Length: 233
Ligand SMILES: [Zn+2]
Image 1 (cartoon, helix red, strand yellow):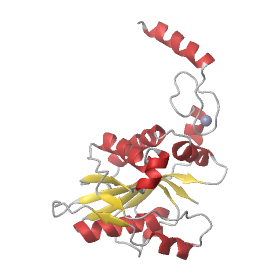
Image 2 (cartoon, rainbow, N blue to C red):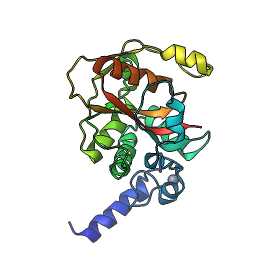
Image 3 (tube, helix red, strand yellow):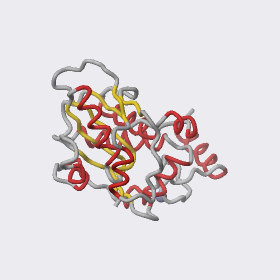
């Protein structure tokens, strides 16, 4: 099929079955894949991957020994990113997490801080939640990172022992107590200097990430860095 004909057919399909921007809901143009150009331009990218002393890293300081930590986007109430996260978590569009994971992976590849990584490990969902939702959005985010960075994804290394209650409405201390010691780790042998990139969709209090990082370090003695798709403000 010629390129022109493909364009025309693409436009035709778009007119009758318009795809929506995951961030603002506008009808996407033919060249736009998941988000419109305006959203791509206005999304609050953090650039945290370019420096160690960033807000995500600071949030985890003193709670677990984490090498580097970063978040791709800032999440504010009523924002484009909030809509994006909603589409990913509750509207059956996990491929958006993979898309953003891939984009972030390309950026991390250019950072001097995220080198020598041996595996990417997503924060797991409890089996009951996984059954209900049908997918783990953090795994999709990790899959995108893995494809871009050529680092293997190990989605079954960390296991969730029990489901946590919803975090909404709890104060910070209660949230920490709620996720304390909820992960177990598969016993495997890693290289002595193994360095795992632990990934999650949204960093809120950091309690889940800290618990996952401690689980990995205590069981495997590896170094841990962190990357999340978004960081709640
Ligand atoms: Zn948009």
